[in-house]
Image (tube, rainbow, N blue to C red; front, side, top):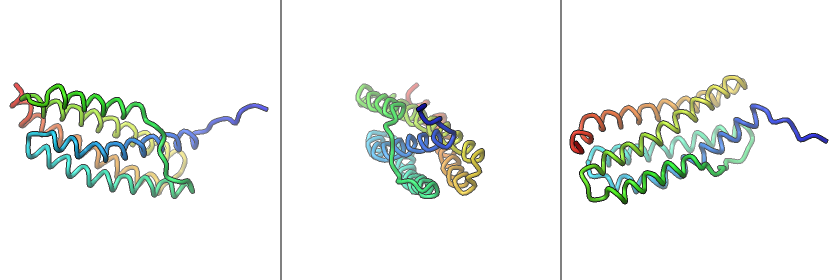
Length: 164
């Protein structure tokens, strides 16, 4: 007998598990980034984003509920790599003027990953007619875009000037 043909529903669920794992990993990582940051604004941005991330995880759990599935993650090598890269920047540039610029760049790599994932999940949810999931995923997507804009403003205004 042939293996069951995978569907967009299967891909949606797999990607949902991927971002769920990623968000939980990010939640654990944000205090480290806040602690390492020199700039008060950057520390505050990470602390604010940590609260938002908790809300995003809760929304993802609601999407799992809509699917009648248990909320669980699958290992996301992409986010593991992005976060490891950020940690090595914190180690390598710990005492330097460029530290905050490096942390900011690492944080933006995380945001861009999340924006791509949420954009994809939202589109698939629309295709699958999952209107409640679309709303929840769009809320997460909009928050990630706002965080990315804030990080860009901080980078342009403060951190890049200081590192130059």
